[in-house]
Every structure is written in C-alpha cells, then in structure tokens.
Image (cartoon, one colour):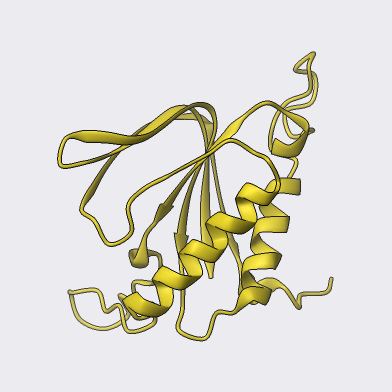
Amino acid sequence: MRFLIQKVSSAEVSVEKNIIGKIEDGLCVFVGYKNNDTIEDINYLVNKLVNMRIFPNENKTKYFDKSILETKYKILLISQFTLYADNKKGRRPSFLLAAKSEIAKNLYKTTIELMRSYNIPLETGKFQAMMEIKLVNIGPTTIMIDSDDKNYTS
C-alpha cells in the first residue's frame, strides 16, 4: 500500500464535470493497493499519515512541526492504482502489482473508515471513476510512504 501525499492550499476532484470532493488547506493523498495488502498496512499508513509532522508551527519558524491531527486542515483521498505502475520492461506500464478492483475497493472503504475515526475532515474521490483532480501544491511538498517500510529499523 502506498500514499503519495501532497501538501495543498486547495484541491478538488470532479467526476463527469461535477465536483465531488473539495478542500482548502490540507493534504491531497493518492492511495494505491497491492493484492496482499491487509488491515495492518492500512493501520500503519493511516497512523503514519495523521501523525506526520508536515505543517508549520504557528510562527512559521519550523516548517515541518505539526501533524494534521494538531491542525484544522483537511484530507482529500483519491484512489490511484497507477501508483503501482511497473515500467521496467517495454514502453507501456504494467499494473500487475496493483490490487484487483474488488480487493482495492474494500481496502479503500476500510481506509476511509479508519481516517474518519480520527475526526479529520475528509473528502474522497470516486473509486474506479475517471476523475479530474485540481490542486495547488504548497512548497512543493510531496512525500511517498509505503507500507512495505513498516518493518524498517534504522
């Protein structure tokens, strides 16, 4: 499971020209799943995300000081199977590493439920829809986290 996290001043997602999710100030998070991802992967990444010190303090003297739990910011969560694109061979990316749609849909629902349990304002895209995402990235700050790193020790 992967999160591609972007700090944004605004973000919105549309399906068929209709805005279905919109935030001001927060994180636009793209999520991709593998077939063998579990609730353990979801717990790891959501916990990592909500506690990641990615926002500035009140004085703006430290730019990576506060987590989204410590702020009034929001999350826009978008499913994106292409986070598992494999482009090692040929010219067309392969998506064999990405979870099958039924598996990914259930994992996505579970991810949404867990995020909502933190009482962080959450907007979402539409699973398996062709979406248009507009965002204004701050920094730019873009961070990738992967549940394969959950057993990492330094």
